[in-house]
Image (cartoon, rainbow, N blue to C red; front, side):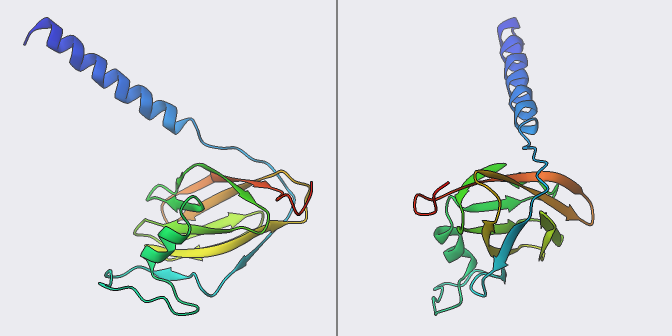
Length: 165
């Protein structure tokens, strides 16, 4: 191999390693002890099986694909290591968010003492609200049979203009 080729390979490996290190260090932190109220909607709990050719939308049911589209920008996926992606999301008080388990294990997502159990490859829609002063940082603790990750994701809860500060 030429010396230039070896140098480029080493540089590429270092860049990939650097990106990986930076992405691992971006985990959010939050130590809020205040209570947040989360309520589930019957529209949103589901376990994905085989995708249907033509998804149905009827009143209170939604397919996984429809939920992904409907909650674009308001969805956090949790992987096999219980890490949330994206690591942070900003929402308004009263917004709904899709909690999406993309692992082969059931997970438990705790948000200020409220627990949401999501089956393997399942998902759930919850409404995020709080009696606390806004803005409010809400950490999500993820637990599976293999991992337990404090602050696996963070919701930056903001007031909407009609709610005031």
